[in-house]
Length: 597
Image (cartoon, rainbow, N blue to C red):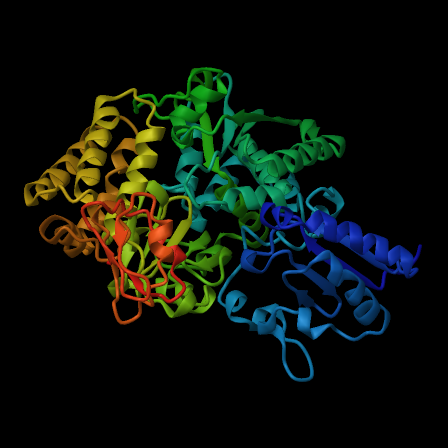
């Protein structure tokens, strides 16, 4: 067998795939052959490395050289300089890793050094389409342990003692949920995985399934053993083709190795697993709607109680956790509940994965210990706000969450702290906003989403969210009154109290949190008929600075409604009555003479 001299890890997650990683991998393989190195270096397509802002990413081991924003034309230089001559190509490296005489390890750079990867432990490390690589990193060791050394009660106790809470939104005790399903009476039980993940800006579950699908399969088998189930379903949205493909490959490999199916590890335990594709309905992220969809019916929520642990899929006891929750299970079994208890805060144990997006330099996927502050995530891990802008707010929990203002940047990120300030953990989307964002417009954006995604089954959500959106639209159009702000708040609490499922119950959260922390912006829209951020089109006002205007007439020629007039070589003016706020004039001006207020 030929000795492999090095490994070339290329990110094959959705982000890097969309940036052309396939072409880079193909070029690398061709260059290795051309230089006679194909037996000395192994190219491995992995899952997401996390730092999506720098994709496509390639890491060359054993040196650990982190090449960022790689293009196919760069590959020849990397092969000829680094692989052939041993000279790392520093100008192609992630610059945070560059030192004078050597390169830093990833654990020394700001983006990674405060992270702790448990759910993401294998993402960017192994080939997700090769079960042998997963097994080499202790894969299926936890399943073997529970089937040969632990009773069902022992497994449930271990998960309860760990303090693991559901990573999908509400943060309910995972061990208690397992215990309720175990104790439920039924001749047939099921386990299910929620991989629907419909929050705008969220891609945590997708990345885990793309980079480490076997961890979820192993965890579901452990859960099935613990609660007494023999059949499982993974509900994943069809918009995740890479995740679906790798998940199916992993299921097929696990069956081939005898890790799914009949008599696993010759213990008499049977467990099979199937994929069910969702059509992209946000409401199907709610557990009862998800189960209704798996059954082949329209995805609408059901009243609770009874809860799924008692009456779930096909009215049988069903355990449902999300992808990230399951991804923690093998590590808890392998390392023990006491180990997991040492991570995080008193009531929020372990880590949390966030999809960091919006107005932030280091967009990507991060996993931090519970209790890490928002400031640490934004300023250190996230690298701060681009273009010297000021941080304004962060939205956690997607359409179900709230906006956290700059004054609360030192809030620790855990379940209870977020709820106390009017937000929530949710599945883990974290969208950053700067001074150029209008918070009324942000609330309106999320309301538009929930109105569109409401299943319409209950009146408070179907009608109430529409009325909320109408009020917000009235305000952003400059037609709102101070009484409308009171109506907004009153309607929010009414919808929260009377909606059938979590979608409606949490839909008002973005409105309530922005009303609480950014009420001055609402009042500016109502009283002054101005949008402080200059975002709301109906309230925008374009003006020409006479001192900067050169009288070139380009703005007037670009105006589609003839709202700009003047004499050549003299300052032009905008007729506010005619102006439709399209911004064509500002885009055309070469002298920065047109301001938007």
